[in-house]
Length: 134
Image (cartoon, rainbow, N blue to C red; front, side, top):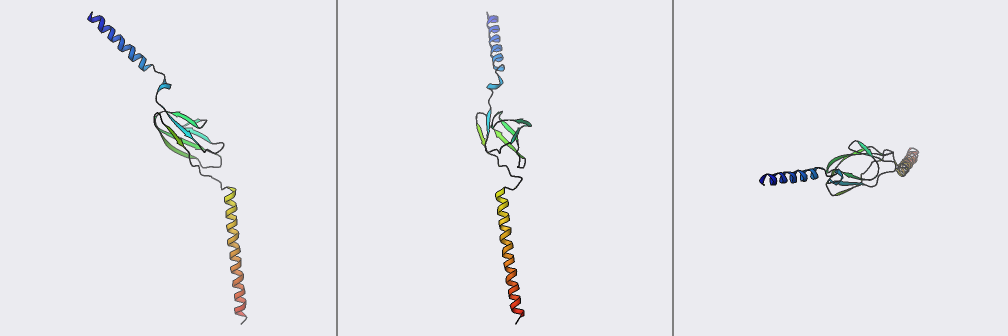
């Protein structure tokens, strides 16, 4: 009788271990990375693999996030994902080309500085002309 009980206990333990180890990977704890504010045409690479979309289920821990967008400098970040949590991330991408508005502002400032310089030069000539005629 003791042998039968021992065999049943061993079988029960074996079944428990089998079912615990055969759990699908999808049931393991994950976290979510949600990206927002990406420019049009941006490419997202996570841990060296290009992915599509803006919401990603990732294993807990650190992940390398790389972003490539037309007209912007490439960017690389390390994000920390926690199990059961959502990380909402809005990366700041730096434009590699000046915007039309910035170009117009720069041209306006240059024009003002040139006009100011011409005005100073004209006043200097007028003063010199008056001073030398005396």
